[in-house]
View (cartoon, rainbow over the protein chains, first blue to last red):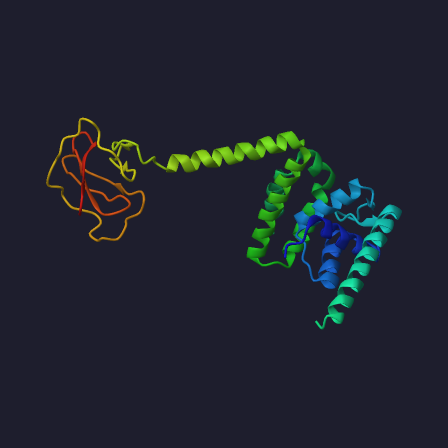
Length: 101
Length: 171
């Protein structure tokens, strides 16, 4: 199933919740915890949108690699999204268990 | 992956975007290319170009975006239409300098057609339906035949004018 743009944002925010990262580190971290491989073009498409929305901000580049950091607003949005997903998971898994899945 | 190749791929992005993010994305693609296969690297370049075009499209207003999509679809329709010959087109279609003729299925004879007999050879020699369009190259002074979709037919070509003068059912 293809990764939707909204999902990419969530993956990036989740990765940055663990600390500042540049693009390559983000890709590797996301691949490790979510088993999803984002291409460079897709990753930067999502990074630009998140920066425009104020959810992340760019730090000073280290050579040609620029790390990104989660902002307070980004932290808030991530918490909200993950809480909603957690609730959904609990309800869904509970119903599956109740109906003998 | 070569740096110049990456830079060419990134030309698909708007220049303002490249000024701000181009260096980082270039470095990221080089980092990724270091541990990718040749096919993977090529795919990354193509995908990055596609993302660049998507970024350009994203930046135009919704009306311009819709207009661009309509233009692309119209161009595609025109190309398909150019490849498709109407069933009511007359027999004498476009003739290339080398004498190739494209035929429409169920093509109609021109009003002033003359029946010319004894073609040099018939194609195809089976009862299977032939491809929708078939081209034939003919030499001056030689009449050749060509098949159209549906049952095999004998098409007779005037060797001087290059115009098709008869279509007779049967091989």
